[in-house]
Structure formats: C-alpha cells, structure tokens
Length: 477
Ligand code: C2O
Ligand code: CU
Image 1 (tube, protein in one colour):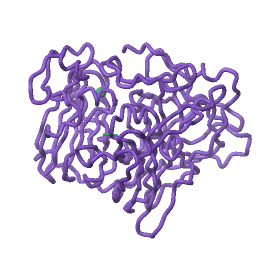
Image 2 (cartoon, helix red, strand yellow):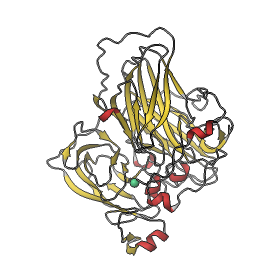
Image 3 (cartoon, helix red, strand yellow):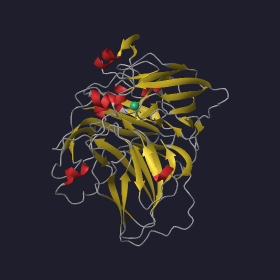
Image 4 (cartoon, rainbow, N blue to C red):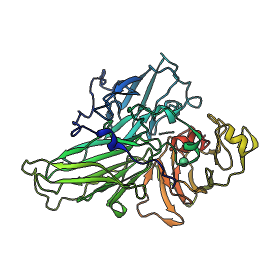
C-alpha cells in the first residue's frame, strides 16, 4: 500500500556497462590473537563507496572499516568472540548482534544494556555464539539513520560440521534513498516514513553495489545466505528456472522446504539460508526478481552461467539438513499466555496512547514523533519500564496482534521463538525466528522459554516504526 516511490536503480546506470564484481569481503579488518578467543575490530566512520558506480562513483556513507557492508565476522559455533568497536562518527553509537543469544550486557542497546559509545570512544563486546547460523550486526542508536547510511555487516557462525556445498555465499540486501547525484537523501525519520511503510528507498544493492550479474557454474550447489539489512523494504525473491530450498531462517535450521509460491519473502532484519542447485547449462542466464510490492517487480540481478564444464551433474542429491541449535523447547501446556497488540500508523485510527505514563492525544503524540503503540503505549526514546516481566526458564506464548494496515517485522532480542500459529492456524514448519513478519491485520502466536535474563528490546524492525513508538522492553528475571 502507498508505494509511491518507484525503484529507480537503473537510472543510475546510464552509460555504464556491467558493474564489475568486487571481492565480497575485505579481510584487512580481521585479526586474531589467542586460540580461545577470536578477536575482531570494527571502526564506525564515514567513507565514500561506489554504491551505484559510474557516473557517480562515490557516495558518502557511514560504515564499518570503510566498506559497505562492514567486514563479515566469521566464527564457529561455541566460540568466544571479542570485538573492539571504535566510534569514528560524530554522534553516539552502539553495536547490536542481531539474533545472537548473548548476555544482556553485550546486546548493544543504548541506555538499556550499556552507555552509548561516544564519538572517539571504544567499547569491547565479548560473548559466545551458542547457535550456528546467519546473523548480522548493526547500531542500535538512531538506527533508522545509522543503518540507513550503511552501518551493518554479516555475522556468520559456522556449524561444527558444515553441510557439503560447493560454495557458501552471502548476499546482504539493502535499500537506499539516493538523490540524483547518488548522495543519500538526508530526510531520515520524516513523519511520512514513520507513519507509513518506513523509509523504502529507490536503489537496491547486493553487498553494497548495484549488481548486474552473479556468476555461477553449472552443476554447483550453493548455500546462499540472505540478509535483509534494509530499514523498511521487504523482499520477495524469485529465482527463475531454479528451485531454492530453505534450510534455515533467522539462522535457525528448519525442515528443508521450497518457499511458498517459490518466493523467498524477507522482511527487514530477517535472514534465510537457501540451498540452490545450479541446474542450468553453461552459458545460460536467469533473472532473479524481487516481486514483493505489487506491480513494482524489478530485476535484482542475473545469474550468469559460465562456459565451463559442469562441476557435476545432479543425481539424487539429498536435501541439505542442518543440526538443530541448542534451544530450549517451550512447554505449550504450562506456558503463560500474553496478548500484545500493535496499533497506530496511517489509517490506523489511533486516537491516543500512553506516553511517559500519561494518556496522550494523537496530536501531542505526533508532535513527539509517535504514531505507533504496543498495548496502547507509545515508547519515546528508550523506554525503560518493562511491558512484560517474565520468569526465567518459564515457557511463554505471546499472541501478537497486528491491528494496523501495515506489515511489521517484530524482533525480540536475546531469544529465538517458535512461530506456532498464524491467524489461528498452526504453522507447518513451526520455525524458530528472532524476527516474525506480521502481515496487515495478522495474528501470530510465538512460543519460547524465557531463559536469558535481562531487559530485552521487542520492536518493529522497520526502523522508522521503531522510532515512531513501536517498541517495548521485555524483562526476564
Ligand atoms: Cu536488529 Cu533491536 O535490532
Ligand atoms: Cu512496523
């Protein structure tokens, strides 16, 4: 709904041939010291990067270690990581390790789990990654601007025995609102974006570039890790001529299955691990399309088969199955239930909500940049008073009710949860997620064991909705 801004990525390509493939990950940032701890350094700062290529080779961005995306942090399951973060921005920042079930003090939420990192200051994060899978990192301070300007990267936790594939590839999808000269439009957090579908941009990149092609070989099996790092854009990827299998969602293994309608839908912050067998012939070309927004489908890039002889022919390759992560299984019979209702937004009819502990009319709310509410409370800044207090190690079922006309990818920190039903119907795969995409007016039940003590954010990952009041704190004691 209200998708007025078209996807205009092609307009930046006038006069260019195919964008060259850049090496995926700069390795310079990575260093390691002793064997028991893996050390990394991230420096948040400003840089110029070739998002769109000629004739506008340099877009000023904010990013980690001079590149968009930031360096991929790769560790093994169960390993301890230590990440030194330096703030070279002119404002406060933090780093949140999205989806990692880590100790609360390492979660990177300013004023809730740590003091923000001031310009010129450093902070060291240290934690163990209990789950293998595809995760990512990004700031949690003014994230609607800091993420929107390019601060994010992949955090990949390898299985102790990774499945056999020919290539393991990461695509970080992101979305930019660029001006004609390819500079980033600085209208971050405007009330139109906040009250509608967020900051949907006009330029989509894969690993920080507009990509024309992605080179493949006939007969190879690729594990494709997709990360939606956009502030607000939803993706529905279609791989013409190919059949992707989903093997994990939000890093958590799932019974391998073909996505519904052969479209891989990813709301902001969501990840999917796909296995795609390249069954085309040498020299063939296939288009990958994003068709989420009705009538606005566009070509993301083309899979281009090399002329080389096939790596192998596919016979009866079994689907790739991943071992489950060590998650506690919620006990649905004894689980305590809570309903959480999301309201507001344009066409939402919200007349008032609680702000700073007082019932407040919509005009005053809007004056404070607030148009969304969670159980009638519009959170301003970082709301420290918990919406729910959960008993440690107890099972919970939260019924999430989207009483709005908009999509919301709802993210709970510090835990993974099973999605057990949607609109009253049990889900087929009972997938473990950390971010569940609610369709307009949809209800979903999520179940989990509250086994990680601390104060955890629960918010919409359309970052404009988050800043517009759609966030809460869940306390586990
Ligand atoms: Cu990906 Cu609260 O964040
Ligand atoms: Cu939302």
